[in-house]
Amino acid sequence: MAEAVFEVFRGNRDGGQAVTYRVPIVPGMVVLDALHHIQAHQAPDLAVRWNCKAGKCGSCSAEVNGRPRLTCKTRMDSLPLDKPITVQPMKSFPLIKDLVTDVSWNYRVNKKIPPFTPKPGTDWKMYQADVDRVQEFRKCIECFLCQNVCHVLREHEDMEHFGGPRFFVRVAGLEMHPLDSKSRTRLLKDELGIGLCNITKCCTEVCPEEIHITDNAIIPLKERVVDEFYDPLLMLVRKIRGAKPA
Image (cartoon, rainbow, N blue to C red; front, side, top):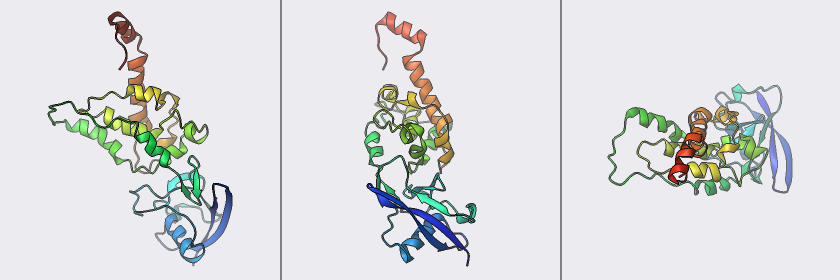
Protein backbone atom coordinates (compact mmCIF):
# COMPACT_ATOMS: atom_id res chain seq x y z
CA MET A 1 0.00 0.00 0.00
CA ALA A 2 1.27 3.47 -0.90
CA GLU A 3 2.25 5.77 1.92
CA ALA A 4 2.50 9.52 2.36
CA VAL A 5 4.84 11.28 4.74
CA PHE A 6 3.25 14.04 6.78
CA GLU A 7 5.01 16.74 8.75
CA VAL A 8 2.34 17.99 11.16
CA PHE A 9 2.88 20.89 13.52
CA ARG A 10 2.65 19.89 17.18
CA GLY A 11 2.76 22.49 19.90
CA ASN A 12 0.96 25.29 21.72
CA ARG A 13 1.29 28.99 22.53
CA ASP A 14 4.73 28.37 24.04
CA GLY A 15 6.17 26.85 20.86
CA GLY A 16 6.37 23.59 18.95
CA GLN A 17 7.78 21.78 15.96
CA ALA A 18 6.82 19.58 13.02
CA VAL A 19 6.48 15.87 13.78
CA THR A 20 6.77 13.25 11.01
CA TYR A 21 4.08 10.60 10.47
CA ARG A 22 3.65 7.97 7.77
CA VAL A 23 0.09 7.36 6.61
CA PRO A 24 -1.21 4.67 4.19
CA ILE A 25 -3.05 6.13 1.20
CA VAL A 26 -6.36 4.80 -0.11
CA PRO A 27 -8.42 6.01 -3.11
CA GLY A 28 -10.54 9.08 -2.44
CA MET A 29 -8.59 10.06 0.66
CA VAL A 30 -8.39 13.68 1.79
CA VAL A 31 -5.94 15.34 4.17
CA LEU A 32 -8.48 15.28 7.01
CA ASP A 33 -8.69 11.49 6.61
CA ALA A 34 -4.92 11.33 7.06
CA LEU A 35 -5.11 13.46 10.20
CA HIS A 36 -7.80 11.16 11.57
CA HIS A 37 -5.58 8.17 10.83
CA ILE A 38 -2.75 9.82 12.75
CA GLN A 39 -5.11 10.44 15.66
CA ALA A 40 -6.37 6.87 15.63
CA HIS A 41 -3.04 5.05 15.28
CA GLN A 42 -0.12 7.29 16.20
CA ALA A 43 -1.00 10.46 18.09
CA PRO A 44 -4.36 10.33 19.89
CA ASP A 45 -3.68 13.73 21.46
CA LEU A 46 -3.37 15.52 18.10
CA ALA A 47 -5.69 18.54 18.23
CA VAL A 48 -7.69 19.05 15.02
CA ARG A 49 -10.85 21.09 14.63
CA TRP A 50 -13.47 19.61 12.30
CA ASN A 51 -17.20 18.95 12.14
CA CYS A 52 -19.04 18.09 8.92
CA LYS A 53 -16.27 16.69 6.68
CA ALA A 54 -18.33 17.98 3.76
CA GLY A 55 -16.78 21.38 3.11
CA LYS A 56 -19.67 23.30 4.65
CA CYS A 57 -18.82 23.94 8.31
CA GLY A 58 -15.50 25.71 7.73
CA SER A 59 -13.98 24.12 10.83
CA CYS A 60 -11.02 22.20 9.41
CA SER A 61 -9.05 25.15 8.04
CA ALA A 62 -5.27 24.70 8.04
CA GLU A 63 -2.24 25.34 5.84
CA VAL A 64 -1.35 22.38 3.65
CA ASN A 65 2.00 22.70 1.91
CA GLY A 66 1.92 26.38 2.86
CA ARG A 67 -1.47 27.12 1.27
CA PRO A 68 -4.59 27.85 3.37
CA ARG A 69 -7.12 25.12 2.64
CA LEU A 70 -9.99 23.10 4.05
CA THR A 71 -8.37 19.76 4.89
CA CYS A 72 -11.64 17.95 4.13
CA LYS A 73 -11.60 19.25 0.53
CA THR A 74 -7.89 18.74 -0.14
CA ARG A 75 -7.57 15.41 -1.92
CA MET A 76 -4.42 13.40 -1.47
CA ASP A 77 -4.22 12.69 -5.19
CA SER A 78 -3.91 16.44 -5.80
CA LEU A 79 -0.72 16.67 -3.73
CA PRO A 80 2.82 15.59 -4.65
CA LEU A 81 3.63 12.45 -2.68
CA ASP A 82 7.33 12.35 -3.51
CA LYS A 83 8.06 14.75 -0.65
CA PRO A 84 6.58 15.33 2.84
CA ILE A 85 3.17 17.01 3.07
CA THR A 86 3.26 19.80 5.62
CA VAL A 87 0.18 20.61 7.71
CA GLN A 88 0.31 23.73 9.88
CA PRO A 89 -2.24 25.86 11.75
CA MET A 90 -3.51 29.15 10.32
CA LYS A 91 -0.86 31.78 10.97
CA SER A 92 -3.06 34.85 11.38
CA PHE A 93 -4.66 33.70 14.62
CA PRO A 94 -3.27 32.82 18.07
CA LEU A 95 -2.38 29.16 18.44
CA ILE A 96 -4.25 27.04 20.98
CA LYS A 97 -2.81 23.59 20.31
CA ASP A 98 -1.42 21.76 17.28
CA LEU A 99 -3.70 22.68 14.35
CA VAL A 100 -6.32 24.53 16.42
CA THR A 101 -6.26 28.33 16.51
CA ASP A 102 -8.27 30.92 18.41
CA VAL A 103 -10.56 32.60 15.88
CA SER A 104 -12.78 34.36 18.45
CA TRP A 105 -11.58 37.78 17.24
CA ASN A 106 -13.73 37.28 14.15
CA TYR A 107 -16.88 37.07 16.22
CA ARG A 108 -16.03 40.29 18.04
CA VAL A 109 -15.72 42.03 14.66
CA ASN A 110 -19.03 40.55 13.60
CA LYS A 111 -20.79 42.22 16.53
CA LYS A 112 -19.81 45.66 15.20
CA ILE A 113 -21.89 45.23 12.04
CA PRO A 114 -25.51 46.49 12.23
CA PRO A 115 -27.91 43.73 11.17
CA PHE A 116 -30.34 43.77 8.27
CA THR A 117 -32.58 46.81 8.74
CA PRO A 118 -35.59 47.06 6.39
CA LYS A 119 -37.73 50.18 6.21
CA PRO A 120 -40.99 50.07 8.19
CA GLY A 121 -43.85 48.85 6.04
CA THR A 122 -41.48 47.32 3.50
CA ASP A 123 -43.04 45.65 0.49
CA TRP A 124 -41.14 42.34 0.44
CA LYS A 125 -40.84 42.10 -3.31
CA MET A 126 -37.48 41.92 -5.07
CA TYR A 127 -36.20 41.45 -8.59
CA GLN A 128 -34.42 38.17 -9.16
CA ALA A 129 -31.29 40.05 -10.27
CA ASP A 130 -31.14 41.76 -6.87
CA VAL A 131 -31.54 38.43 -5.11
CA ASP A 132 -28.79 36.87 -7.18
CA ARG A 133 -26.40 39.73 -6.43
CA VAL A 134 -26.45 39.18 -2.65
CA GLN A 135 -26.94 35.42 -2.72
CA GLU A 136 -23.26 34.88 -3.53
CA PHE A 137 -22.26 36.47 -0.22
CA ARG A 138 -24.54 34.10 1.70
CA LYS A 139 -22.38 31.16 0.59
CA CYS A 140 -19.65 32.06 3.10
CA ILE A 141 -18.99 29.17 5.52
CA GLU A 142 -16.75 31.24 7.83
CA CYS A 143 -13.71 29.05 7.38
CA PHE A 144 -11.65 32.26 7.80
CA LEU A 145 -9.14 31.19 5.15
CA CYS A 146 -9.56 34.62 3.55
CA GLN A 147 -8.79 36.24 6.90
CA ASN A 148 -5.76 34.01 7.32
CA VAL A 149 -4.22 34.88 3.95
CA CYS A 150 -4.97 38.64 4.11
CA HIS A 151 -1.66 40.48 4.41
CA VAL A 152 -3.14 43.22 6.63
CA LEU A 153 -3.97 40.60 9.25
CA ARG A 154 -1.23 38.04 8.55
CA GLU A 155 1.80 40.28 8.09
CA HIS A 156 0.83 43.55 9.77
CA GLU A 157 -1.40 42.06 12.51
CA ASP A 158 -3.62 45.15 12.31
CA MET A 159 -6.67 43.55 13.86
CA GLU A 160 -7.65 46.68 15.79
CA HIS A 161 -8.27 48.72 12.64
CA PHE A 162 -9.27 46.15 10.01
CA GLY A 163 -12.27 43.87 9.63
CA GLY A 164 -10.91 41.59 6.94
CA PRO A 165 -12.43 40.14 3.76
CA ARG A 166 -14.90 37.86 5.51
CA PHE A 167 -16.68 40.84 7.07
CA PHE A 168 -16.48 42.95 3.95
CA VAL A 169 -18.44 40.10 2.38
CA ARG A 170 -21.01 40.26 5.17
CA VAL A 171 -21.35 44.03 4.89
CA ALA A 172 -21.69 43.73 1.11
CA GLY A 173 -24.56 41.29 1.55
CA LEU A 174 -26.34 43.86 3.70
CA GLU A 175 -25.42 47.05 1.84
CA MET A 176 -26.46 45.60 -1.53
CA HIS A 177 -29.70 44.09 -0.25
CA PRO A 178 -32.50 45.95 -2.05
CA LEU A 179 -34.64 46.19 1.10
CA ASP A 180 -31.97 47.25 3.59
CA SER A 181 -32.11 50.89 4.73
CA LYS A 182 -28.99 51.16 6.92
CA SER A 183 -25.76 52.83 5.76
CA ARG A 184 -22.56 51.15 6.93
CA THR A 185 -20.09 53.26 4.96
CA ARG A 186 -18.78 55.09 8.04
CA LEU A 187 -18.28 51.76 9.79
CA LEU A 188 -16.33 50.52 6.75
CA LYS A 189 -14.18 53.65 6.74
CA ASP A 190 -13.56 54.26 10.44
CA GLU A 191 -13.77 50.87 12.18
CA LEU A 192 -13.34 48.13 9.58
CA GLY A 193 -10.58 49.98 7.72
CA ILE A 194 -11.54 49.01 4.20
CA GLY A 195 -9.05 51.60 2.90
CA LEU A 196 -6.20 49.37 4.11
CA CYS A 197 -7.10 46.67 1.58
CA ASN A 198 -4.99 46.95 -1.59
CA ILE A 199 -7.11 44.40 -3.51
CA THR A 200 -4.42 41.77 -4.13
CA LYS A 201 -7.21 39.16 -4.52
CA CYS A 202 -5.41 36.63 -2.32
CA CYS A 203 -8.65 36.23 -0.34
CA THR A 204 -10.56 35.36 -3.50
CA GLU A 205 -7.96 32.78 -4.49
CA VAL A 206 -8.34 30.71 -1.30
CA CYS A 207 -12.14 30.91 -0.88
CA PRO A 208 -13.50 27.32 -0.99
CA GLU A 209 -16.95 28.62 -1.98
CA GLU A 210 -15.44 30.58 -4.91
CA ILE A 211 -16.96 33.86 -3.79
CA HIS A 212 -15.59 36.75 -5.83
CA ILE A 213 -14.65 38.62 -2.67
CA THR A 214 -12.51 41.33 -4.23
CA ASP A 215 -14.47 42.10 -7.39
CA ASN A 216 -18.02 41.71 -6.10
CA ALA A 217 -17.72 42.79 -2.45
CA ILE A 218 -14.61 44.81 -1.60
CA ILE A 219 -14.29 47.00 -4.69
CA PRO A 220 -18.00 48.06 -4.73
CA LEU A 221 -17.78 48.85 -1.00
CA LYS A 222 -14.64 50.91 -1.56
CA GLU A 223 -16.53 52.82 -4.25
CA ARG A 224 -19.38 53.52 -1.84
CA VAL A 225 -16.98 54.87 0.78
CA VAL A 226 -15.27 57.09 -1.80
CA ASP A 227 -18.61 58.39 -3.08
CA GLU A 228 -19.81 59.10 0.46
CA PHE A 229 -16.72 60.76 1.92
CA TYR A 230 -14.42 61.89 -0.90
CA ASP A 231 -16.58 62.89 -3.87
CA PRO A 232 -15.70 66.61 -4.42
CA LEU A 233 -19.10 67.50 -5.86
CA LEU A 234 -20.95 65.87 -2.99
CA MET A 235 -18.60 67.57 -0.53
CA LEU A 236 -19.45 70.93 -2.09
CA VAL A 237 -23.21 70.25 -1.90
CA ARG A 238 -22.88 69.26 1.76
CA LYS A 239 -20.88 72.38 2.51
CA ILE A 240 -23.58 74.56 0.95
CA ARG A 241 -26.34 72.72 2.81
CA GLY A 242 -24.37 72.35 6.04
CA ALA A 243 -24.91 68.61 6.00
CA LYS A 244 -22.51 65.85 7.10
CA PRO A 245 -21.78 62.37 5.69
CA ALA A 246 -23.94 59.52 7.00
